[in-house]
Image (cartoon, rainbow, N blue to C red; front, side, top):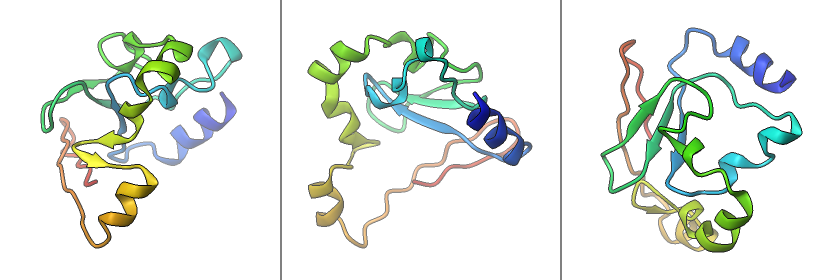
Length: 117
C-alpha cells in the first residue's frame, strides 16, 4: 500500500491510466489478500478488440479486470492475455520483431488525458 500511496501522490492530477487486458494474471499479482493495492487511477480494461475498452475509476472494479481474480486459473489458462495488448504481441519475440513500430491508441477521460502505447 505504501508504494501505491506514494505513486498516487506523485501522479496526482496527471492523466495516468492502468491498462489491463482480459484475463491477464499479472495485474492481480501479488493478490489483494497479501495487502497489495493498486494505485487509484482509472483503469482502461480491454476485454475485446481494440479500440473498445471499459474505463473504471475504482481500483479492482469488477467491471474491469477485477472480475477475473483467480490468479492460479488465469496463470494456467490465460497467460496469453499478458502477451497481447491492444493487438500487439508484447512477448519478447513480438517486441523484437516489431522494432521501430509504435501502436498508438488514445484513451481519454473527462480531464482530456491521453495514453499513447
